[in-house]
Image (cartoon, rainbow, N blue to C red; front, side, top):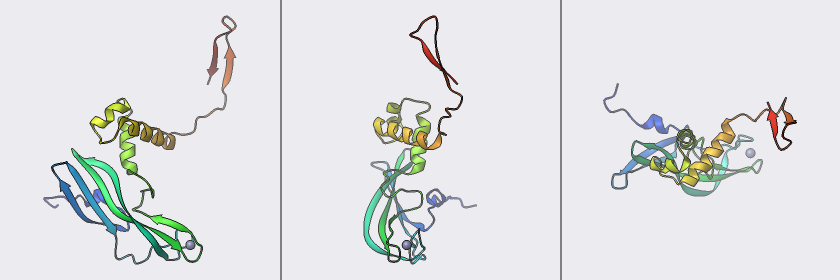
Length: 170
Ligand SMILES: [Zn+2]
């Protein structure tokens, strides 16, 4: 086993490699530079597998899970490709990152997890985001992770003693 374990497994995105990691200790921020794996010559259309031509590129910075007290951002160049066969246009980013995502899914899940144990406006004491963002990500993750509510077998009742009391029995 290596005496200095690599951080690479933490940033393993298939088809992408770590170019370098810069750390600015003054602002306690790590910048993980990713680039597309040069061994993969063409990005293929997800609909018909035809190699896609590059239309335009876009330099992106996406917030990721912190490393201890270091804030982490992934930096990479996304590119938009167009399929010459089916006309499909898609943006190519590291797997798991939506084309316009400001943060990784795993950071959003972590924030949502913190929101179980503290008010959303306390999360900024641990993660460099606003309380409003914590609230929004928590809601987004809950909508994804929780199953749809079951409405089968619900009965409504009206209290005979107090007509103002209504209820729902599951
Ligand atoms: Zn295609």
